[in-house]
Image 1 (cartoon, rainbow, N blue to C red):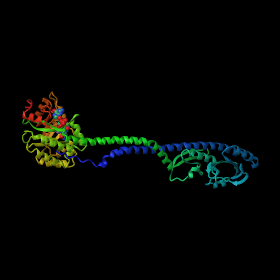
Image 2: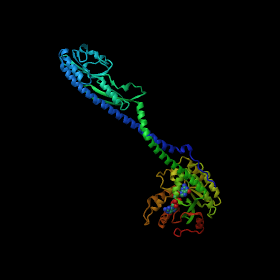
Image 3: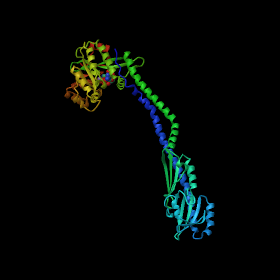
Image 4: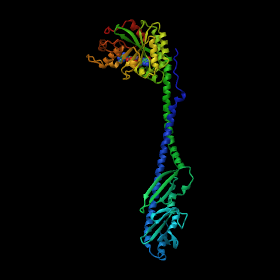
Length: 526
Ligand code: G
Ligand code: G
Ligand code: MN
């Protein structure tokens, strides 16, 4: 008795979850470390910018003090004032020169002594400037055309004024020192002047990214701006460094997840294998639960219920293995096996023609093209008894139909088979399928039967279902009838069939044959 195995999905897809479980932590690690490296670099750039800003402000504060003193020296002749200028210039750090001006002409300088130069000379570095818009950074001064400086100037109402040239060297050294913190490129700009830049600025890099900008307003009215940039390579390097730190962890997690996914996959595989093996080993058998006709007062049919007895571990609950078989694409193979078992059992029965055999058909099977052939073969193999085969299908399988279920039902009903809707009332609230699908029986779920009260109260939902069925011309089978008052209630409302422990429990074929021959019909039901 071969049971055709279901074809397994393409093997290349089967281990996709395993691959994902392995790769996902790596991707997360890469993404996270990228964010982390980015953040860390930005934070360091912020610190670098602040150090530069604080130090620069300190230099400028001193320079402003000096400017006040220089501007206060005038008026006076250069030879008289020069010693003071020179002493102050020599004893204080930072300054390149201190100078005095009169009507836009510099006439006395701590570096050159008495001179006569135009203030406009400064405008050669590198933009047009006038003392009104000082302080500002410049790329050079008349004394040192190639070395940046910061200029501060103050003019007095009487036409005199003072000039302080702060040597850019100090700022430059500061920028160079701070740049080593993180392979940074830094620049400092005062006002709208020319930037003073770290040595690293000109270094060739494929791509430079701005990281941080710090600005502060100087008392003179000009803004102080510090820009921090870094080559993209530095970021990539920082990223790969933290990647290296966390990669082993991510790999470990990935491996763990992949192993879990693989085990799960293997388990699923092995469940299919277990089912196939159990079918070959004959671990499945069928219990038959009699269905009682109220009209004739006799058993007029059975429902076939699959049972799995595992040697060693006992019975497996049918709802569990049926659901698992459905989930793993094994339900069709299992139902074919069931049909074969029924064929074998039915040969030993002494049931009359048109004795109902109810078979549960799962949604996947109902909507498969192979159903008609499977059932036709079954009918042919039990032809000796000429039973009436009833397919028990769920509401769900009708609602999810894409057409094939309908064609199958039509084809099989045309050959004299019947269709019952199983567990009616528990699946979906939509009833529209009742108008569209030609069916024969409604099997009312045992939940509604259990709602019948012993004291003779109402069971309105049950009543409504019975009325609905009769209006639709469908015969009702009440499931799960366990006690007398339930039986009486259903009988009073004209239900055609009952099924339940009150009448008989599901039983193996041999037992059913004995039970049926003994005419074991309950007295109470008679
Ligand atoms: O009596 P029992 O505990 O077997 O029923 C449990 C559930 O399993 C019921 O919903 C019943 O319809 C379902 N079931 C039992 N046998 C089969 C079967 O052969 N095929 C399908 N699809 N369902 C079955
Ligand atoms: O296919 P369906 O869901 O109708 O399966 C019927 C289920 O109801 C089976 O699990 C069967 O064992 C169970 N059953 C049959 N008769 C009774 C009964 O009287 N009471 C209860 N609780 N369950 C029953
Ligand atoms: Mn059923």
